[in-house]
Image (cartoon, rainbow, N blue to C red; front, side):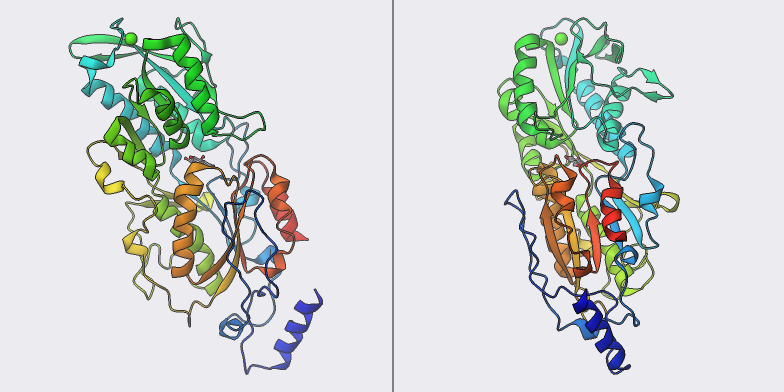
Length: 445
Ligand code: BGC
Ligand code: CA
C-alpha cells in the first residue's frame, strides 16, 4: 500500500517526463508456489519496463483491471444460467471457452458415424443391442452437461426434461428401463439396432475432484465386470477419463472409446484403436485468454489480433471462433479428430500459426498477470492448455504467474490471490462455476 502510494507520488512528481504505468508492477518475488507442485511459476518482478507503459496517470484499482474467466464459465451449476454479474464485472471482463453445443453435436455425430461405418463388427455379442457406457465429468459444468446431451441426442437415448435433454447420470440400466434415458435405435446394414446407455456416472473422487481420470479407470472395471461383452462402445466427456478407461480395459478388449479435448496422448491412441476425440481448439482458446487481457492493457480495440490483424500480423478467421457480445464471451469452434485426420493433431501444444507472431515490446510492454488453473491434475488443462498459455505469454509479452489449485476447494486458490495489487490483469479458472464472487470480492477490496 505504502509502496504503491509512493510510486504514484513519484509518478506525478515526474510530471510528464515519463509516462507512468496504469498497472502496478510486482515489487517483490511472488509468493505463489503451487501446492500441487507441478505448476510453473514465472518470476514477475521487473520494474524496468514500467516507464514504457503508455497508460495515463493514476494507478488502476484492482476492480478496474482486465479480467478474463476461462474454461469454466461463470454460471449456475444447477441451471446453467450465465452469471452476467461476473461476466460484466468491469468493462474489460470477458469469458473465453469454446462452443459447447457445437462440440457436443460433433461428439455425438462422431460416435454415431462410427457405429454406422462399423456395423458389421460393432455388436460384440450379436444380440442386436448396441450398448455403451458413459463417463460424465462434472454434473454442474456446462461443457460436461452439453457433451452428455450431445451423445444422447445423436444416439436417440435422450429424454426431454424442461425443454432440454436430461443429462442426469443413469447409474446402471442393464434392461433399458431407466427413466432418465431411453433406448434409441439405429438403422444400418439393412437392420435396426437398439442403442442402450448401459451405465453412466459422474467421475468424482472421494475428495471431491471432478473429471477424475482414476475414478473412470476404476469405473470401467466395475462396468466391464457387470456388463462384459454387452459393452460395444465407451464414451467419455473428456480424454483424461477416456484414456484411463482405454488403458484399463477397452484397448485390450478392442472396444472403441471416444473422448474430448484432443490431448496428444489421446490423438496418438487413435492409431491403437481409440475411437476419436474432439479438438476444442485449445490453441485458439489459450491465445484468446491472454489476448483479451493484452488488448485491454494496451487500451486498443478488443478485436485487435482477433477479428482484425494486429501490427505483427496476428489475426483469427471466423471459422475458428465466435464472439457473443451479449454473453461477453469468446467461443472457439470444435473439430472432430478421428482415424481420418488425426495425423494433423499429434501435438496439442502447438501454437496456432495465424496468431504466432511476437508482439513489439515498445507498444505492448511487459505486464504482470495472475492466472490460476483450477486443478493442477486436470489432464486437459495440464497437458494441453497450460503449455499453450506458456507459449503465448511470451509472444504477448506477459509475465504470468501460474497458480495450480487442488480441483476441490476454491479457497486453496483464492488464498493465493493475497496481493492483487501486484498484478495488472487476472485470468481465472474456477473450481465451481457458481463461485465467481469469491474472486471478484477480493478485487473489490
Ligand atoms: C475439458 C475437460 C476438463 C475441464 C476442466 C473441459 O473443457 O474438456 O477435459 O477437465 O474442461 O474444467
Ligand atoms: Ca450387443
